Length: 120
Image (tube, rainbow, N blue to C red; front, side, top):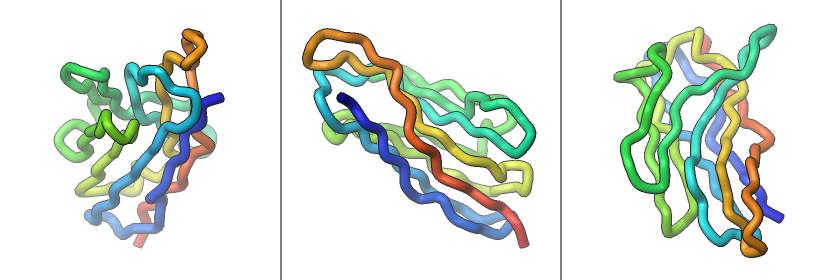
């Protein structure tokens, strides 16, 4: 069993900053790609950013230059630094990871989500 636990969601004013964290735990042999997705009310879930275990991240066009994804492989943790936040960034943010378990099963794991609200 593998779990992802997100933290850091909050209410923030437009132009403000926020940092999300997501830690993977459980029967982990290796964590491959980790990423963040978001879902606003009435919309489908969409990719924000993702980063492989080694290599360069990729971002949705709408967040380039404002949001930065990073990871600590020793801690199986991925972060999302969010700067210059806009009201349209309001959404539930979900963490996702591709995990090879200790039983050599490949798992596509999702967290429960953390709410980011950008409003004055």
